[in-house]
Length: 257
Length: 257
Image 1: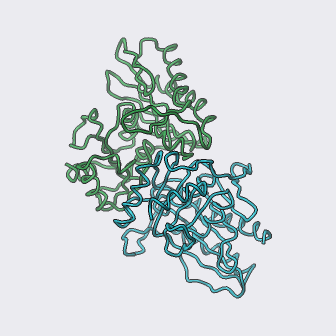
Image 2: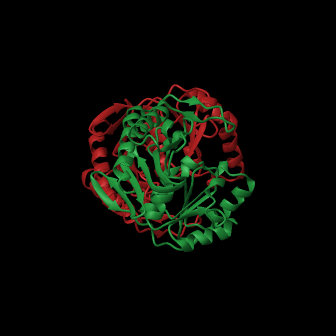
Image 3: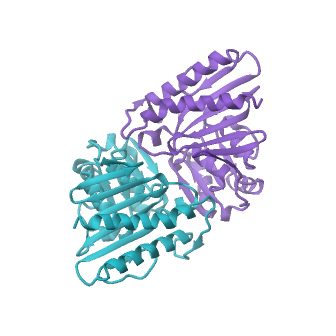
């Protein structure tokens, strides 16, 4: 399975070639017209997904592909890829560098390899069953979550407190009231910082498979815990908790349950 | 007055020498014990302010100094400096790169030169009466705000929606409901991105002079408008609006007034 890792990194490289040159101030955006209103899709999104799909279709024509932008390609066999060419498109169009490209390799639907590629920051977070690492500025660093085990010492993050429904919002505010500090607006980059040990807890709702698949191997490979809001692994509801430690995950789940 | 610019840049360089080596994951933080609870002050904060003060006291012993961390030094004459060694200390201790060092030169209390130095991103935003520019990766780029003039096309930002009091929160939510998109958690970096044209509107409350003095020459030098929530320049109330254009500033003020 680890033979796929260089290929997964080549996918991230191909995405960077499409995203970075287009990451300019005031990048043109169009409107998907979804029920939430503004949802920018940039050329970067479309071209990066197309570039990754071309590589997969050429090298592994039997692999499935599920991306944010284009129709699903069913797998013939056990392997499939989950792609989000630009996670954090709002940050992208606001000239903020925390957007990422998300790539996951799934074995019978279970994510085994994950890449969170923060191209504008020059940081690539990679999760495998054997651990997780960060490539930055020609250095490779092992990723380890922090040793914080209680909410009162936890650095909490969520992308947008306004996307919660009222009961989710109340649950989040219980966490926020007890956490050490809270940050917003990070999308997948928040999970990468949990893996790196500088954040301790991310709580979000409304995530799609292409949003969360790549995060699972990265957080787990760094020693963290990622699950749903009820203490299980029903990710498909889109309610995700990622924590630096089992104790912190369980304390968070007790408070939001 | 422009003779002070190289000196102001030397202050930013001195601050970087203290902040960047200490900007590591899980940077130790202490608690100021203020009424808001958690307020990290890192060694980086204290040492960067001390380094800048030493340079000013040596070169311009008559200049006043007002910093976040140490007692005010009164001016003997017209010139004084406003220093915030680490704006966005919460981002700093959460391993997020959007923290900045803020430096302003004031003439009889009015900010004339401003620097927003995003050291971890390698970006230095400089505002002068003759314009504003960004130094990044050995390139100097002129800063110009966007041409967006209406709230419905504006990319809005505020640092933390939970720091508003109830009437401020209602005012902010009126803006948020009409803006194109909203981002959080940027501290002074949001104003720098208004100057760079990738955000269009920042609305905040609770800012101290060391938080806003450096922002004024940067936003104005880039062609933007920065004022208070009532359409004036009573910055001392700490309620700040920065906008890409006069029209957008006035639309925002009408909605929050």
